[in-house]
Image (cartoon, rainbow, N blue to C red):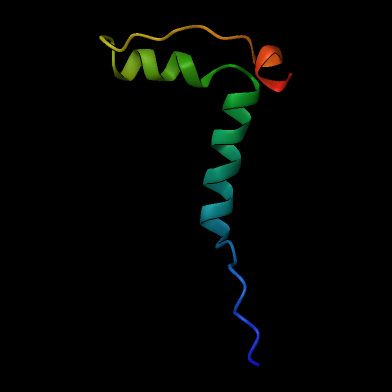
Length: 52
């Protein structure tokens, strides 16, 4: 049997992913989306409720 090749991150892909993840954790991503898409409606949910 041949092992399947594992997926790997490119340095650029990892950098972009970490930028998005950091914005999510700092609650800044929603601000960006409202600036980019002013008509977008968002229902606020508490992250702690989602983890339960």
